[in-house]
Length: 535
Image 1 (cartoon, rainbow, N blue to C red):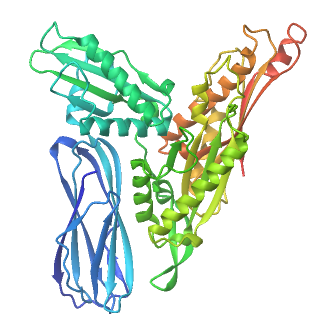
Image 2 (image 1 turned 120 degrees about the vertical axis):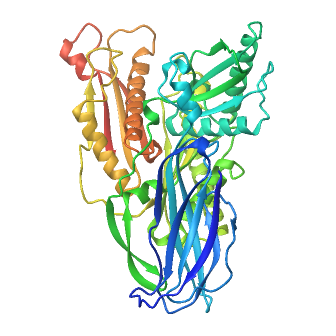
Image 3 (image 1 turned 90 degrees about the vertical axis):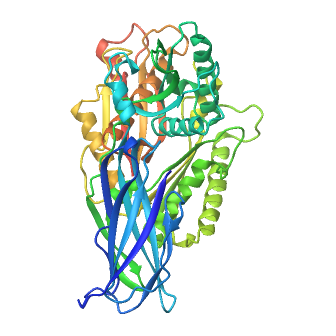
């Protein structure tokens, strides 16, 4: 993450008498909007004035990417002095939406400190990607490229030691964790028709799958488009692309004021305005439990980045923040384990909560001021080796940490439940149904207001004759999966991280009259999928 913060302090005396006794910024958020990656560094200015009677100096500048600050004056800023803070952002190699936090710490002559929080955000697009997309034969007419990696020195193997390749794997992992699936396209251009296209395609496929599964992404969630291997007249390269799909739409955060919450600022009780953009901007942590892991993987880069971004955003606001910590276990039966799945989920949840608290304390945060809510669950279909391979159950073994501002929900913006009856066995849901969209409206409102929403899901199949002893049970669960996919896609289209929607229970039923006994309408009553909000 290439964020560079340069501070140029221009001391300007003024005779204006201020009413507010504090450091006042002219703005706290700057939106660069659209940035073309190849055009390089972009710069903005934040201007602040010392309107207090005290002298202040800047003692710390912290950014959400742990970058260093240079050119910081050591002089005190007197009453009425105006200062310009210049912030530069380098988008090179970082296509996509970004939001970076900057914490500025001031100290007066008596040692008292105050903190101010700034944000820069925008959307970086790649001119290279835009050029590719202008050609019909490139990227199979896909709408966009989210991330890509290019290897120009093309041998017969993928350069897995390349730093840029490792960054590509990290970004692809984030997409897969956010959306449960990631679409990847392998493209090769070469001048020589005798080049071993097939060998490098196989090698690239093998390594991408290997590296993503090591990051905890199930292989069935890695979707490869048909690879492309074409002759090139002027260049050789291999390109790996995370390709856009509907659920990758860039979010748009509306800053709707949710509440004014009493808090202590500079030793005085004041009211802080909490809005939906602040609620949604808090980072969410997600990890799979793999290889017997029963605690947070604190050594992972993902956790370190989460903790860094979280600390900057919530420092000084401890009493306003709560955490929902979700520990999930699957219904797979562990033959080698003496404990049941609920015990395993509880153990993981307790361990992770305590470890998380310890790391918050190390960051200088007042842990006792936070609220911690734990959600322990055993979820997914019942173990059935005929329907699901063991690896399938891994996706239900996870930890999630959802931070949120504690705001009371007072309103309703849609339906609190949804049900769909099926006319055909393998029918898929229509995401444009009014009842479905109304249900998502309420979920969206809850997430933007209280930071998360909880739902219970229920899938049902009738007892009509189907091939396979457990086919009806699998159909019931397939309907749940289809509903979850539609909910996640619709939320992300609205700029909501689907990880903030927590499924606390999944129930499957095979019910209704026995085959060839009941009337058609009786079977239809048992063919449904249902979702209900949980308080």
